[in-house]
Amino acid sequence: MRKSLRSFTLRAAAFGLLLAGGLAQADEPLKLGTTAAFAPPLEVAVAEAKAQGLDVELVEFTDWIAPNVSLANGDIDVNYFQHIPFLENAKKEGGYDLVPVARGVLNNVGLYSKKHKDFSTLPDGAKVAIANDPINGGRGLQLLRKAGLIELKPDVGYKATLDDITANPKNIRIIELEAVQLVRALDEVDLAQGYPHYIRLAGTHDPESALLFDGLDNPEYIIQFVAQPAKAKDARLLKFIDIYQHSPAVRAALDKAHGKLYQPGWES
Figure 1 (spheres, rainbow, N blue to C red):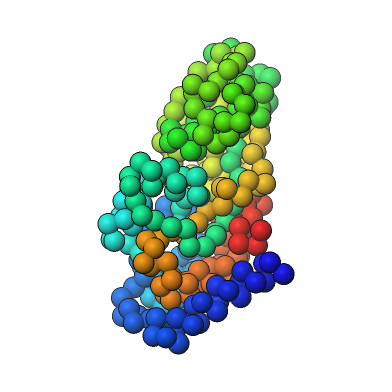
Figure 2 (figure 1 turned 120 degrees about the horizontal axis):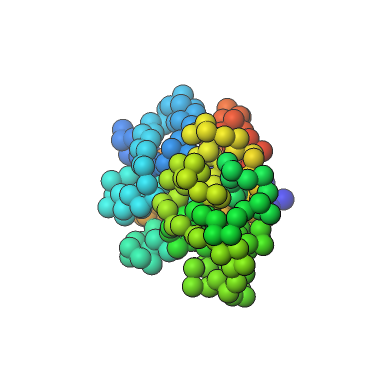
């Protein structure tokens, strides 16, 4: 019942705005910012939207900073690449007035290695790469804790930093890198935090080959459609979100892009 109500509410809101002339900006494309990992299914949604008379322009960014800067400046109408903890940290650091509008996908994150088959063979002083931003880096540290490689202060959660490490029995050397660069680091390190969607794009190894995944039971990591408050009820945006969440063609593209390592966050 909860899933159906959420879906009905979104569709009703979009329909109501359409009746009220909410597509007054119909001559202007809806500008949606994203990153490479999320682009393929969004491209299918853009094509679906076009067939329904909605013009959407996809703007692809190469880092995780510019999408929020561009959104806050009004250069794009919405972005889709971040979960709420990342958004809240970006708002705190950048002073942005941005809000989550609707849920997207929930992705697994794992620990990958090209040199080792399990954690027991990691040498003393092994090089381990994790994300360098405060939130995804904390997620990487939680993975290392789950793997038994480090211990952390109690209850730090995804806000964990290197200063929160209380034990490191293998003396692993943790290297912090921009998250989108982690897949490239696998040739240089013993172990790296990895995002299956980026690994699939890189085509360097099997995205399902992680030694450990963090699991799909962390709803705080659901990717969100994010906009300025004034654009949160834009009928163009609500219509596009409805297409993304309910189009069979988009679902097929999501399955192709993410395999079995994701869940539709709007259904949880």
